[in-house]
Length: 106
Image (cartoon, rainbow, N blue to C red; front, top):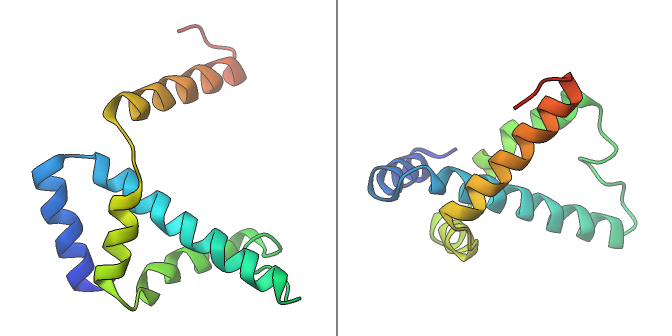
């Protein structure tokens, strides 16, 4: 991630809390999904869905470095509407699913 973007994420993190981390991640994945759909529509193979695990990780690591317009990226970050209650509900759902998979009781 470019330094300017990282500083802005940290600034918002200090101001608003952990919600920004979820917003940034969702904005990255949304951007990757749009790029994948455009590649498929153009008749090119989708890079992330058809990639090996290692290549997918590399793509995810490199994606933040390719953020050309920081202001536009943060507009997409703040377009993600996510409440703390929604985050907590998703965390609980994940914990329950993981506990069930592992055969643990909550």
